[in-house]
Length: 134
Image (cartoon, helix red, strand yellow):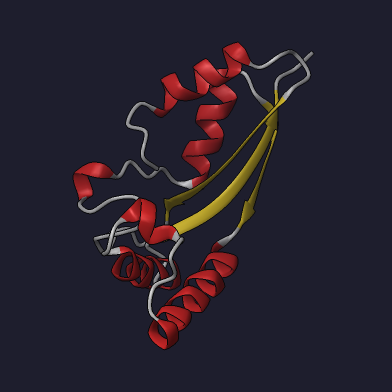
């Protein structure tokens, strides 16, 4: 979601993985309704985000040479995690270590916007595993 040239990224992953090896990633994909709500945990503004649909991601991986591409919808897991994080911050304040250390003080806003984006069909988080043929 943060890589502009996804085709080049997947091609390089394919190049360096040994035959028979696997490539796994987790990302927020573009949902059917699009129109993201910013800031998000990975992008403060639209110019920082490069979401692809699930089908586009699978096609790019296939074009890079990967096979047995399996994707899993992780939206419910993300929503649950964001809600737990936001409830804990509201009750106890931010922890010493947490996503805000990497994402900045706006991380709670980004997490809330990400939750709204997932629930509203704007994003579609997935985990992907695929294989480089032997």
